[in-house]
Image (cartoon, rainbow, N blue to C red; front, side, top):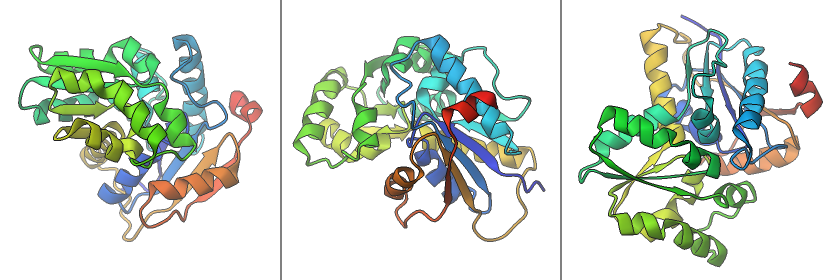
Length: 272
C-alpha cells in the first residue's frame, strides 16, 4: 500500500477533467494538482518554452511527494518526445492512452484529432495511433481558441460565439467522415456538448479521462493503492488567482469542488 498522493499538472484548468475521472476510478486516492493559469495557454508557445514550463511544473509536483505523475496537458504530452520529466516516478501523459482508446473505438478506420496548435503541429497523436494501427486514417485540426473559451467560462453549446468557433474548426473533421474524435486537450471536454451538436454521432474520447484510466492500471499493477476507504482529498495549486481558480474549478465537478487551493508565484515555481 502507498498513501502518497497522485500528482497531476496542466497549463491551466483543463487537467481537472483528468482529476474528475481519477476521483471516479480511484476514489480513495489523494490528488495534488497544479494548474499554471498565469501562463496559459501553452499551445501557442515554442517547443523549447513548453518543455521549460513542463520541467518546472513537474519539479513542483515531485516536491509534493507524489507516487505517480500525470501530465494532463496535450500540449506538454505532445512536446516532450524523449525528454524525461518524471524524476524516476511512474509517469503518463495523455497522448498514448487516448490514442489507444480511439483505435479500439474506431469502426470505420477514420479518427479525428483536435488540439492546440503545438499539439497538432507535433503530430504526436497521429504517430501514436499509427504505431498501434498503421492503416487507420487520421485527420487533425488545431483549435487554438478552445482553451481561452473554456478558461473564461464560455462553454454553453447555445452560445453564438461557441457555436460559430466550433463550427469553423470542426467542419473539416465532419467532412472527413471520422466516427471517433480525440479531444486532444484536457480543456476540450467542456465543449463536448457543442462538439457533439456539430459532429452528430461521433464517439468523443477525452484525453484526460483516458490518462486517468491508464493511471489506475499503473496504480494497480504497481500495488500502489492507498489502502484507505472513503474519498481522498484534493490539494490544488495555481500560479494565478486562487479565488478565480476555485470559482472555475467548480465547473469541472458535478457535485461542486471541496479541495484546497493555494497560489504559488512564477518566481517560486522557477526556483523549484
